Length: 168
Image (cartoon, rainbow, N blue to C red):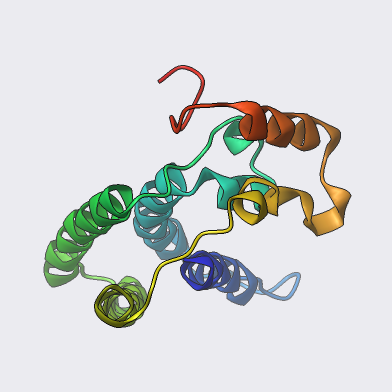
């Protein structure tokens, strides 16, 4: 899952980097980047809803107090939601007129196809193991953690239930 997040973030950031132009040069229409990023954010939203610790690790404060539900049922629910979003993206690809967006959608499709094949292999062949302490404090590793994140991670560690957020 970390590879997935890294791949999606890298894709979004690489689009931003490639869109920069020299100062004073004529800038062509780059609205396709925002459109492409919207598709990527649809997938990121699903993934981070099921792995909020990764959102916290990326510096997104809204995920600091949320906790994932590390069960096979939640993993399968995330897979179904991602497949649903990918079906929408595939449908959008057939009607998309911009070749840049089409190319990005194809990259996303290939990345998730690979991810799904790896997940299928893991479900069939590997013995699952989650290190709860590592998952809970994962967001604190980078840059020593933000003070608010450190407090939220401690709260997640003390929480007896497996709900994703204090309000659910």
